[in-house]
Image (cartoon, rainbow, N blue to C red):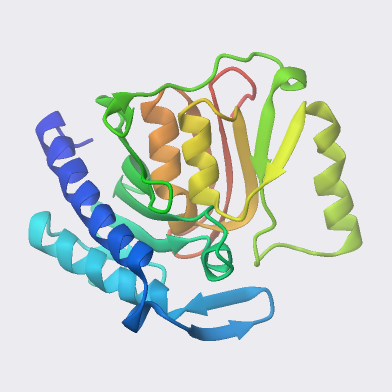
Length: 251
């Protein structure tokens, strides 16, 4: 794992890039207007690519490393330490003026997220954290919730575009909801994980989600005292993710 000085530099760079992209997304106009394509359950906005360009330029200038980003893919061959970026998580929400969307930037070492920044730019909530350093919301320390029973807890989840939508698969998925006090789907995996990290929710699960959607949020959850598991073969292929406050699941 990176030393603490390197992690601090990583967080400064990620916060700078997230703020710059978030400000541009909040202002809109120009390159940030319009739908690039809409196919099946997926939607890509011009805003996704415009925000990505800002983030890549900032990260490259401040802490150079290979970058895996949702729109561009890899900017260089993967190494032991890489940036993983989702420039606009919750594109459909953003397109319909629903405030649940975020900029998500992770620092990943040997395939494991160790630092993350998530910026809810419309509500101006900046989540930042690194394993071994701690986690903060707008500069104030944050931590996971302390519930120990699912019956008292809120689960955040979602229906990723890559998942199986058959009646059997959806029935199996919904069958576990009865264990939880409440279940929420908000259309942004990054934001969902940020809510677990700050204790507003207790757990998150999603299958067939992309790594860039969850990398920063998983790092934040661990930095805030929780835990996560990511099952998958590659950072650019769908994965299955569990995260919680450290008291609810055996991961």
